Length: 81
Image (tube, rainbow, N blue to C red; front, side, top):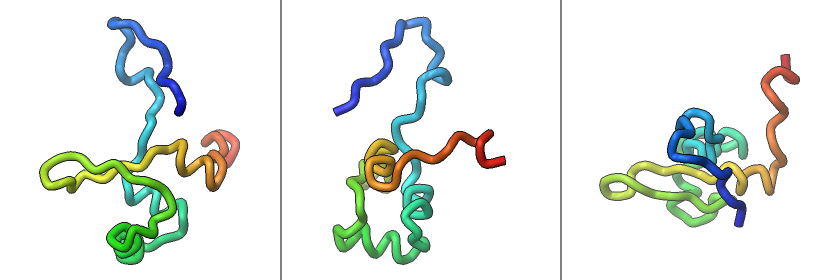
C-alpha cells in the first residue's frame, strides 16, 4: 500500500497530489462508455476496485494507483502538446 506524502498542518490541501479520480474518468481510461461502465460496476467486473461514499454510496471514486498499475501512468500534460 502506498503511503501518503508527509504533510504538516500548514501544508495547503491543494499541494497534495490527488489519490483518486471520478468513476467516469476511470471508465474512459479503460475504454468504457457510460452505460457499459455502470453495467460492469453492477456486475462486479469493473477492472479496478472503487470507493463509494456519500448518501447511499452514490459518490464513486477510483484509486489512481490501481488504474496506473494496469494501464501505466498518463504522460505529463506538457509532453502530449
